[in-house]
Amino acid sequence: MQAALLFEYPEVIGASLLAALLVIIGMRQNPERENSTWHLPALLAEPAKSVLVILPAKYLRWLDQALMRADFRSNQSFGDFAGAKVYLALSAMLLLFFFPPYVAAAVALVLFCLPDLYLKLRLASRQEEIRRALPQAIDLMVLCVDAGLGLDATLQRIASENSEIASALNDEFVILGREILLGVDREKAYTDLYIRTGVEELKSFGSALNQATKLGLSIAKILRAQSEFLRKRQSQQAEEKAMRMPIYMAFPLWFFVMPALMLLVLGPSLIRFYQTLHP
Image (cartoon, rainbow, N blue to C red; front, side):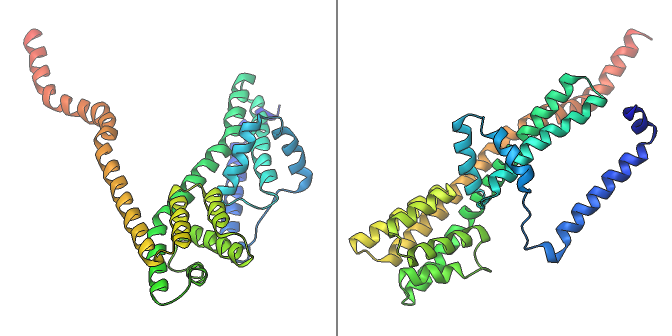
């Protein structure tokens, strides 16, 4: 009955989807909401969390780590993510009005895994942003050290450079500076920096600063060496990507370009051959 009504009035579905889209766009463009954070109400988040905790412990450990590294670090982040997974999957039940149960089950499984894909993409994007910004941040640290600032003051100065450093790296340096000011051991603070981000370059960066501090080496020289190493590594990675491009181009070339080219080259000859056989 409901399905028949929906099919009879498709304009209702279109209008509803358009209204939802306009609401979402309006919320994203509203400057008053730009700095606010929305969380799923506890009444909805708690049941979703109770469903998610029955999953394997290995997955839950990965999820906690991925949420932290993707910058979802509030106490409500796990509940929000659990709600996204569970309620998206439950929304597939609406398909039972139109499709067989196995189709709805397959769509529910895809929707349940969709937030994981988004989280992985968000995590990879944030890590790549940090990698790109790190050499520039180290160059600024070299300038600060050469100007006579200590390492702690340099970290505070770099963390305040919102216009010069990517926001992800800036946020991590702010946390690093606060930990050091609160008396956290410097080596532990650098280790926590790597754990929060999962970026290997930050691990080597922290290890180099630890060694320089323990051995009394020049901080400026260590930072210059780190900056040069990171830029070389980025250049090598760009060259590797360029060398892999022919492999990526092979599929569209053989399956899309070559058939059209063969048809263009051999088409007239095949037509003449057919006309010769069947005058």
